[in-house]
Amino acid sequence: MQPSNQPTIYSITESEIDLNDLLAKITLTSTGAAAIFTGMVRGVTSRGDAHQTEYLEYESYIPMAEAKMKQVAEEIRERWPVVEGIAIVQRIGKLYPKTPTVLIACTAAHRDTGVFDAARYGIDRLKEIVPVWKKEVGPDGQEWVEGDYIPKPGE
Image (cartoon, rainbow, N blue to C red):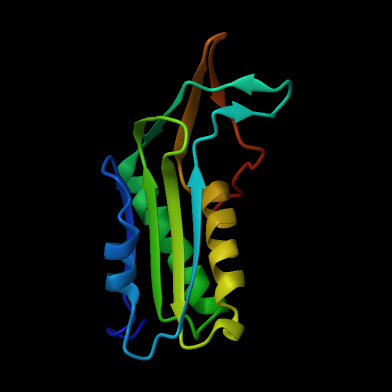
């Protein structure tokens, strides 16, 4: 069970990701470090042959996605008990190049306590188990982009 003073935010949203607001919500008076990862929509994708992306469309089954985000946060806390605050936010809807699509932020008292590793784990794990689907739309058509991970039973 996590102490009540350790803020945890996880959400699927159509709204812009507000980094300052999220940091304010996961920062404690003891916080001295925040590691933040933000994924962005690329205008040019190099997967396969390089091609232009006009926009991405993200979809999600929100109740399951948020339950899996909670699981990711719990896994972070189990592996890095020094992490103070966690924010995991995924945008859905139509998103254009240079737009933030996902944010993982972890705070801790010091930078050398694993806070970078915790944030990296958060984005990697989100990509593995959180049900979010991405359609890439460009001048040559559209394509659903599939990940490589197939969840194991119980994940």
